[in-house]
Image 1 (tube, helix red, strand yellow):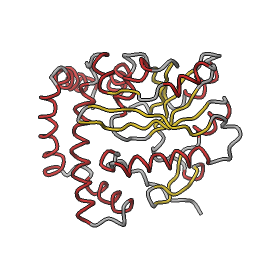
Image 2 (cartoon, one colour):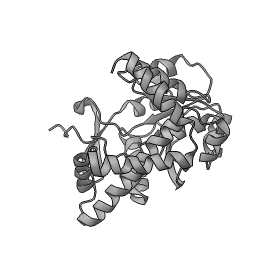
Image 3 (cartoon, helix red, strand yellow):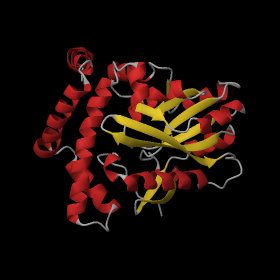
Image 4 (cartoon, helix red, strand yellow):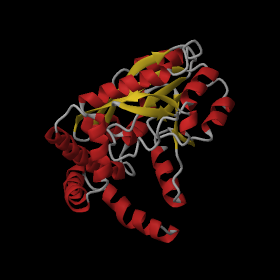
Length: 291
């Protein structure tokens, strides 16, 4: 996509749509659901394979029900993400509330940084926008830069509007090393597929051999950061709540894989509550466990 076409798409379509009220956006979402699910069949083969492998105990009809709910949530997520370009600070606080900010704030009072592990569950975009104003740490989030430079700048600017700093995955270690004594909260969306299966940590997630990137464990131990799991639950359409769960206060003392195993446990727990809210269209299991 050329730079010129990207600008036309953003300024001529996405940005004007983002000013629409939510009730109109959800009308668009309902239309998008029909297009994505019934007409285009967006990644339907990936979604079905992931659901079949993750829930072998369910009947075909039960998995089909989850599949349809996923696409309805997915199109809601798309329009909510477009809305994030112009949503107000007051509105985002209402739509993504932190339930137990006292837990990470207790580490701030001790001058201790924290690392938050989470997954592609519910609306992580609203989580990024709403977090900084509700906790005391300076918040940073690791992200993979987009290949399209224009949209990379636009999305990065949008996510940083209310104080969170976006840093590429490659730059995170350097940033943490050079940050000094200011307590930070680092957000790691940790359910991506690792690029090198030989360097991954492997366990069982949703009945499948699953590799996890180990950088979060290494960084937490090296810089003595407490580790929490950030659980994003959906209250109702367009409204979310974040609850933090403890993983470890002392990452240097735990065995390799302990943090990732706990993260796996919590992520499975929240997916079991409402499986339709996880990103099933993602090719999570591209790599096999090396022998």
